[in-house]
Image (cartoon, rainbow, N blue to C red; front, side, top):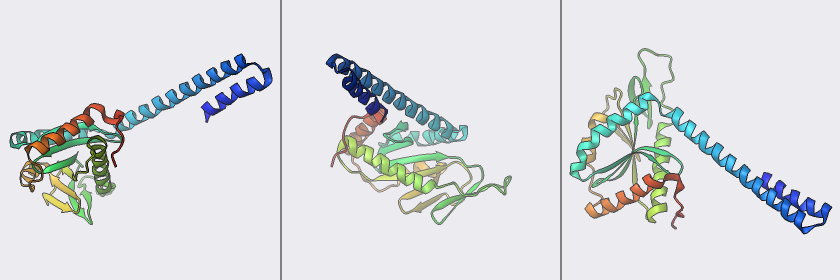
Length: 231
């Protein structure tokens, strides 16, 4: 709207002054001003996104991500490939795994307490903070939304649809060990590698390499990808 107002200023200059040169000057000023405002807004939006990401990445989350990364390193010998802290179009993903068992999007967390899953949502019992909010707020919807967003990113790059399995990795006490709830899997980090090895075969070697190449493009370009979503 600001850019339109500035361009209209050029129109008013033409009406009042009646000279084409004045019109051209007004239009130039209006266009430059609009571009400047758009740039400022873009920078402000990027700064806010960066700040939000920094706030969300707590020391506990960073430690959980490092532990997950270490837990799956040995799977590279079995044909799995990994990217960590991957920037997508609209989000940042903790870990992406591509291998014989398909494409997996993993989120690593370490809530302080004992985790149980009720009705598809995890709850945390905090012995030292019994009055604390027990539910890990909307963890399942966020995990599924991220998996859907990543699937769309792959479609945007490769023009093909792929199933993306959402997995939440706990590094806190989780007596159940592994809970599969529809499209989302909750698992303790110590059991992650074994679970991935046992997944049904979905991709052969060539397919896995092609898919990982697509993921690598996402890692390199992230939100700046100029490619349209394929239909």
